[in-house]
Image (tube, rainbow, N blue to C red; front, top):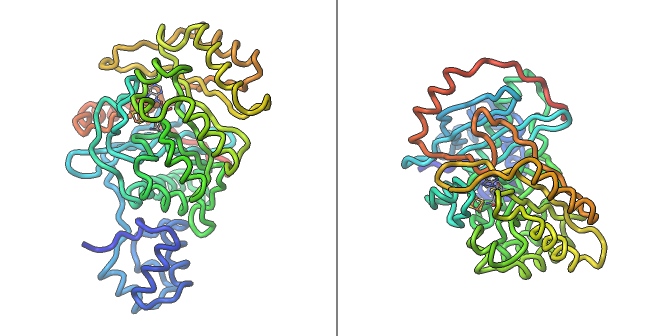
Length: 374
Ligand code: SAH
Ligand code: SF4
């Protein structure tokens, strides 16, 4: 098979070009063509020698992921379902806001962690995505959106690894993808604007802090071990104290001076006053009295197989107030793309959904997106 150039960060592309007998700066040119200009055909790359272009044509490609469906929500959110072969599909979601454009990216087809409240978790694990498949989501979305919005400037200003899969269980593919996102010759995103979300793979959090310390979000969901064991089975391997200590170590290298905790609000399960109290105690036992984390409460997006319900708005508000009163910066996540099932944990990625998706797409109206400020 030909080499997929999306599989490389710049360093990897330099090594590949050296194998072809090409100088380092050629790799930089090529990398810019691919990621900054969204080129797919070597013919376009007119500043590369014809001999090199011919060599690349024979041996390499820029391999996109086939798009199965594309949904636009009334609020501007766009969701793509990409085919990754063998009946597997992954999703990416673009979320436009006034001052930024965020792309939510998948790292695996399915997920092995198996959280109770997550539909990806319920699907089980199919396979890791390659670096090329992770980057293909951003490469496609960015260049599609530039055309769609008729702009030459950057549309995606933030990336969150919060799609399907546990990014830190696909570490070796993740890191080169992150590096290409950060590279000035690639997407040029700052480390603060790229967030890895993890259910708490402690050893890999330490490695990430050394290899590519981007912003970190940790999916907490429970303030004590018995409850977290039940909701996030990985907790049995890396229990709360180990996880919170790993967060402290990460902070020394993090691009921001806080870690974001995600907390999915489940009716009657983890949303009671005693849970808020325990959470404050846990957080206060670290950080020497200084704030060191933010809390992001996510209203649960229900799906039938979970057997769980979303906490009421009043309950979420009361929980948020308790935490805020205790001095912990707390936000409640706004649900976006509700009408297209683009919310967290609703990313089904099942190709069997295709029919349903296609039907729904037929009903969707066309909307004009406003350009997002870079
Ligand atoms: N595996 C990583 C990243 C992907 S999940 C992780 O767990 O952090 C991204 C976020 O969506 C996580 O915080 C996850 O807990 C949350 N999530 C999953 N299912 C959800 C659901 N049904 N409703 C609301 N949030 C959910
Ligand atoms: Fe995997 Fe994250 Fe879903 Fe848990 S919440 S099953 S870790 S994708």
